[in-house]
Image (cartoon, rainbow, N blue to C red; front, side):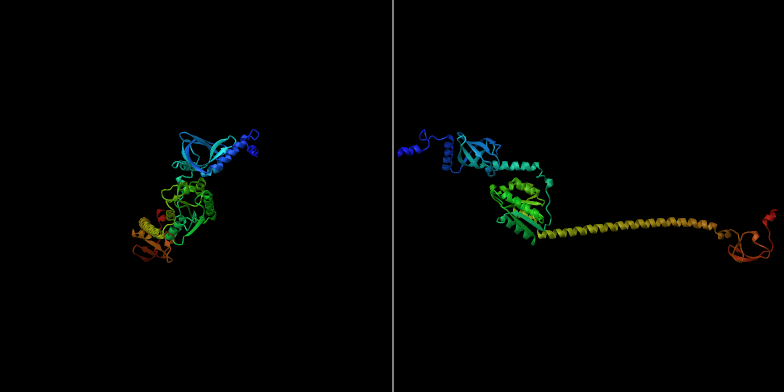
Length: 393
């Protein structure tokens, strides 16, 4: 009975020898069952991204090294590919690669010493956005001065929403506020933030959009460094205020938004002018209109006075010219006047009908006529005719 049991165990005899693949698979199962997930630290060496999407590298210290792999499905948990020589801390599982029988670590999370990986991921995202011109100051839009409707993309369970609503309603009671709920941290946050922005855009009634959340750790805020979120903010047709974390926090979303607010409360202050500010602005506008109207009236009055003086001067000049012309015509008329002729010693003869008698042929003996002199007239009768033609004969 004992001999039969020994013979049943694989590999205990020549007859029960196991294959290499069976040994490697058994070793893999044994290693994975004995070791759970654990954190390991070391230096990245020989990092190679494979065409199949997986990352291969070694993790080493001063005296030893071990092969590592990051499957493509786990890379979303790591901010950026590590660089050779980078000191990291990795969450890994021990496993065996059955095809070669090699021991390796399957890494599912990785953090660089300090903020190396986070900084690298952010720098790469910023570089791509800059290359597309999404951080140019010229593309940033001014906020509307007096919006009637503001939208908020954030979590309805967070303090950020309460702070924004409280500040906005205090500054202008009655302003309309719409909230698009979304996750603001975790694996699903980037997709939910983009979807919430799209919902506000389709709604088409918001005049200002605030995107953000309250404070948190670097990991908590990381969704707002996501390139898809940044591009959704940049593409939004509504002016966007980014309000992520506290004043010391800076995200990629802040860089592409039209306005960056230090806190959610500051975002509400930027989006909604206080009621007293609105009243002051209206009063200032009224004062400007009064000043402008007064200046225009003064300018018009001055112009009218100048025009009146010009018209008066032109009328006087025209009157002088006409007076001179009339005087000249009067002189000419006076020279041609019969009275002027009479004043020089001449007389004019007229018959009873008033017809001027200018020729001897119009007279006959005993004809009565009137003789006009310079200072009066007299009645006369022809006694004798004396023709100048006859005298010449």
